[in-house]
Length: 203
Image (cartoon, rainbow, N blue to C red):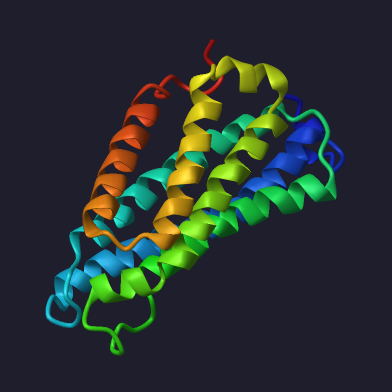
């Protein structure tokens, strides 16, 4: 690629490079929050009682954030950038940070453990998670109709089902439902990532 093209602030490559730095900061904060929380559980196991479903969402979010950062490289295919698109992509990344911050609050002193904390904040967590899945659809459309249709019928069906399950999870307190939900979501996300391991840019 022509070096002058990269240096031209009006070029698509230059704009994406600028955006990628901002996204990297937000993604880095999200991953830091999750890893710091996990380290804290190891360092101070008696500070707050561990809850398997909560840990399941921690692992799921770590997988989703890492995959989000990988998949956003496809934004290089966007032909024309606007400030509105710029703001949308940043807000999309911010949703991930909010989810990670909700999983590991600054303090759990007022709760008996992560189980009581998780259920007390489930409306916020699953509400934002539903918005994340919706934002993912918009983000995919931004990358072009060809890219969207290449994902097949599975993608919109998967997105719709996950949004509906999030809405249900906001109002249901059943522990079995929440455990099955997180296990199923992690397994499916892992399957999605494995099927998407081809290097970016390869046909």
